Image 1 (tube, rainbow, N blue to C red):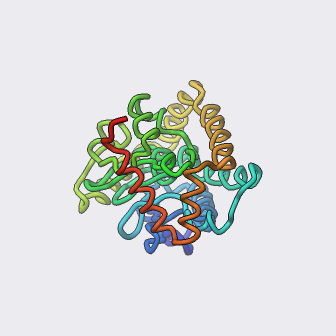
Image 2 (image 1 turned 90 degrees about the horizontal axis):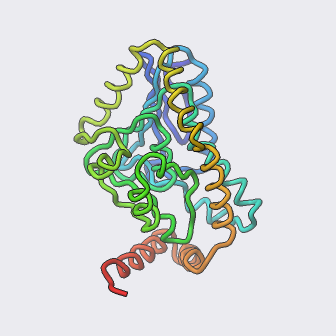
Length: 280
């Protein structure tokens, strides 16, 4: 495989046995659209087939890791039926779990925003390192949406998972994420890539078969506890949530359609700010 692969929405380079996979739509904070999903699968196919690749570092170009799945593309598609939502959400779920299921170790290097589906993708990676100043979380419930890959309860305690998910928190800072066990370490922004690639080199120095089988054994521990079935059940719930809509979703979509995504997100933030600290 060539040292640099050509894509439109991601960048992939391989050097010294380490793959550098970067989400590359910086003008929209690396929002994950259908083209990026297809290219991520293609890149992972190539990297997993290359025996020289011993670890994969995942990061984002520009100001953020990723703002999550592309809401503009979703609005343009206009899914309404459960069948339409199933097709889209199964594709979203598949690209997230690709990083969990990969036989190669995956390391997320997080900076800036890491929200929604992007946060789930980072959780699916084997190790996550966050730059100080990164902001993470899952705001889906705040606009009547559901969670694609409900990994969070498997990565932290139920109290922490419920706080983040039920309140739709999307400004979890790196230090608190580390305290919750959602990232492995927090570093200064100018050291993020150095730390991520240093860890990748440490992993790559081990026996390739031993690393692969050890990752598989850890994953099987979670599978034996029912993680996969729980995730698939949660995905079914998300399909139903998305197809059912609701008043929050209706209003969010109306503002997005009439005034644009920026205004819809601003409405969501004003609505959330008005609820915080208000007694019943």
